[in-house]
Length: 217
Ligand code: CTP
Image (cartoon, rainbow, N blue to C red; front, side, top):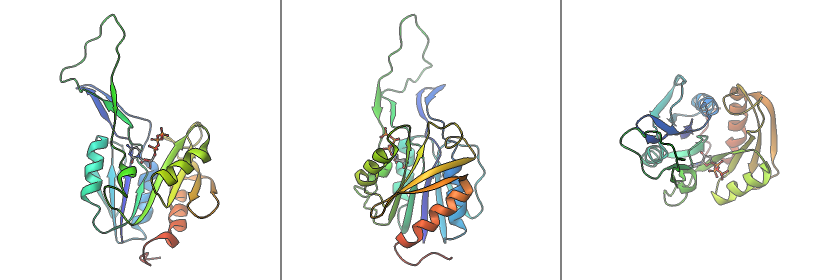
């Protein structure tokens, strides 16, 4: 089976020297890609700008913006049975990208932002993806309620939620602690562990949800 994973942040240009982005290191997505390559035939990792080596046996496409990531995902969906969207995609981008460097002025700078495309939210429609769909939810409050909304709103089979307000886990940390929200059973907490260990635990839980018995384990 072919597995597609998105990872890392995206970067949205403001002018030739500035951009909007976030604190995602890409570690969780890369750990998932490495673990998936040990179990499945083909793993494609679509990643924003990160400082991580490509895991063994993983095909990698580097992208910069949310729009680039959308097109890379859309162009590579053929044959994908499992799609895991762990990327921290920018929700907004500058409405107008300045072609020249913005020069500071005395007055305030009001930057107009517009929404980027919701890649995970486009998977079922318009992209027509029918395989197992996994999203992430990075929350600072009301974790369960917000993650539930994403599970149903984006028609996912699983949402992996984590509390990004905690300094010891999540963004740019070695470890994470996550809550798994499934469509038809109670949420399950996976206690604090390395992202590598959590990647395997997530894939273990996904095995029964996959389209066919396509796992090598
Ligand atoms: N996602 C995406 N495309 C976007 C934004 C997010 O594919 N433009 C995906 C992420 O990869 C992740 C999930 O959607 O799997 C996060 O859902 P989202 O509702 O966008 O959460 P936040 O970005 O945290 O936004 P908010 O909490 O403000 O709704």
